[in-house]
Length: 216
Image 1 (cartoon, helix red, strand yellow):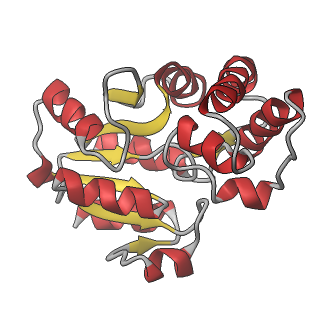
Image 2: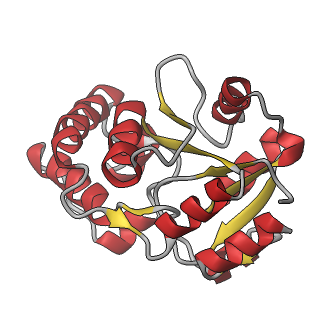
């Protein structure tokens, strides 16, 4: 295999979480009387962590204190409802199993809250990832390299033999900031045209294509 470690983004890459993220966002907005958003709007709000999602979803001009109240309500709701409508993209489970059978280590690095990352991994991919890292206090979120560096340290594998698989411009920057090769997938939240416009070097349309790139 060309790579020893495959690091996956979560939202839009291995799990379609958009419906649950939209529901949680609109629940929090509705609670405080703010306008709600369509699923297509929320699609472009996500990718940089919950704080940035709430910043993008709330009206201009409200105070940081009010935004924090919305964020807290989002977190409370999402903790209970993160898997109501979420599910794996077709072929992803088989892709991860094939990689592991070929000796490739697998990990998840996501800007979702760390407890949600771990819960969703257990729910949908129990035992299929060697490491999983989400947003936690004191750690910079993607596109900062901190989460990837934590995975490297935990697994004892460096960036030179690793590849990052994601679906957004944030993932492109994450891979480059952490010194990894990149694979972008077209089935996620952004799409092929957006990824091409943002400089993606390798774009795959199916999990089988991802496997072939990792195999080399």
